[in-house]
Length: 343
Ligand SMILES: [Zn+2]
Image (cartoon, rainbow, N blue to C red; front, side):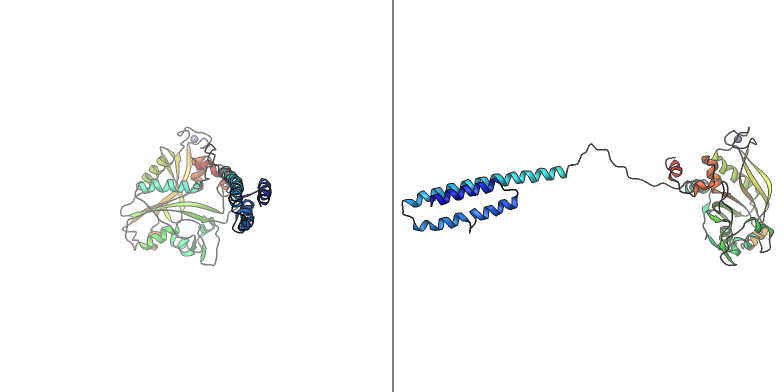
């Protein structure tokens, strides 16, 4: 019996020496020391031993058990240590590595310009009004003193959807909508930024889709001098120009009408490449609201007068940032757009 125990120990230790993982180790524990294991199996024969032999064999059995348990524990803690090291290695965080910056978006340069212009006019007491881009012929043309046969309609080649519906060619229909919503009672003091559409061939200065900002003021006693003062304030804040000049012009919805130039903010008026040596830069169109337009908007032209102006957002942005091609704003080249993200 003693030999059986000793050979079992030898066999067990040899097997334990080759054990590769915790699961196999557990199987060996069951095989040798478990309730139905080999040790129990051998000790079952103790009953047939003499009273002298029993304690001797009992001691051998205890030694064998202790020897096997010892190796199993050793192996067990070695496997646990291995596992801990593996996990530590896998979960290592190197706090010295540089962080990964999160990419952030930025407002489009045209939207930035619109916001800047809005801020300036809001500072002068204007509110921002918006209107639909798909517009009726009535609001886009007729209510602005451009009846169907008016030759000035040719100036704005349009995208018609039906005979009465089109993509708006200007932001001016917002004037008409705002006036009609006021029921003939002033004051009105709005600016209206937005997209407009014309059948133009795209080139460095033309785009079939572009943006305008329209302004409208209606109240009792509004004069040309109010228009001039408002626009001077605007170019001073937007560009740092010191003066404006008005040249007679024609628009169907204003009378009188004026093109407005600002003094060149780069040379101060002495002449440079930007102003083509003239000292002046054309910036927008404006005028006193035509009495017919007031009337169609529900305002009595004998009581109320007003002024209106409109400017191209792209032109303002091109001047402000020295951009030489309008198409840059619409081709979404990140190299172009990123220049404005930090400015
Ligand atoms: Zn200049």
